[in-house]
Length: 551
Image 1: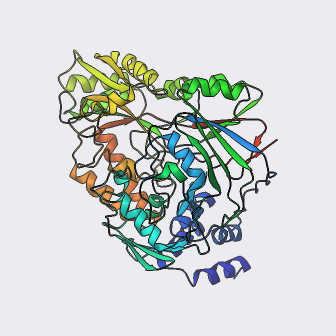
Image 2: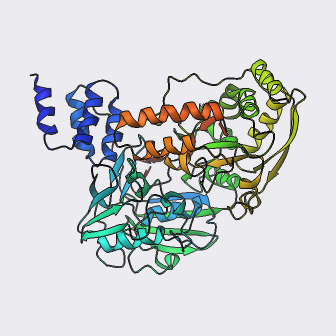
Image 3: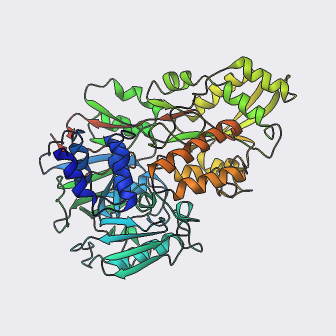
């Protein structure tokens, strides 16, 4: 037996059947290093262990990044927080960019979608993925001096899963984790008893679910006063609508932050943020929209970090309202779109092409062998004629004024003309479009035809459930399909990659046929920084500035 196989064989003896199945996938050549590390990390295997296995089969480690120099102040320009900052309820980038510096998650996603342990040292599922056990890090203190323990984790997730509260994380936890499902085993061990088995649950308690920062059990909703957490920075000052500053936490449990200080400046719009970056008033911005990227892409003093993302724009058609009750009409609209013009023109090549399902190319389970849906005007016209609409129809598309979406809406309007669909546009401010985000009180959820922005996730679970299952709270398409619901349930509970891939392929085929929602493209996230900035890890979830250096 070759030496590297003996090494792997010895390592496998203490692994579960599910953990060993990931190694089987690697050895069989069905997955590469990246997919192996990602899937193994979800199961709770350490990244050094996984990297050692990958190296043993000849898949060497990527180059490590040089550490920056300590000291100095990093200045960031971000959006004005949407209101009082409360990690339980916030939903806007301006708020969570601040909280990410002072509070921490059980784990965080990396640029390659692997999971890195933070406040959890490791985790593992039971046989069917219905219970996940997390071992917590010892020796961690909150900024207020209290020890971090299991009670804090239980209290955090009970708050987030409380159906009678205002938690923004209920969109993730509904049907997944109920209040009372997070249980203390001892001071440094918790069990998550799920409402249904879930094969990728750790992402739901990671930075992917930005409300899931761990707060003290004593938290009373006064976050702005202290920004209390376990993170590498502590609050120095916070002025609503103006800015905030943080200083290095000398008592941090891990590697101390490189910058002495962080300074955040708030801007009401993206254009003033870009001007501040160009003028050298700030060093880094949070992600900027594609439609303004040209302003900074040619600037010799600025580097734009491109982050492959699963963010997208969902173009929904209400399946319970004519003419969209006929799937042939929905298919025809999908076929009239020239996706190359969206990717290469609207997005300037900084996007991946969508194939009318939430399975972005970045997801390991995506079936990339399925034919890519492309523009086919002749077939689209045939479908319209077969549906009795050879003369076309009139319809209003309602959407929001955000990033590239108005441009997408105008291009779609022009594409639809070619098959006789006369689309008028109703482009609204974000507050009006989303309304109260419940059926009957939201243009987003009530409009017959609309385009909605969806933020990045490292796994497709939220995309598959909330906007597409029959009782999904974001089901703007009013799509109800029992077969789809069953396939999603099977995908979500699968612990092994083979089962996930098969379920994903079946879901993709069903959605291509039914086409309740058009997924045309997945735009990259663009993070501009001054050339003097180094060490920023470009993750799609947001800014983590503790390893950044200036100069």
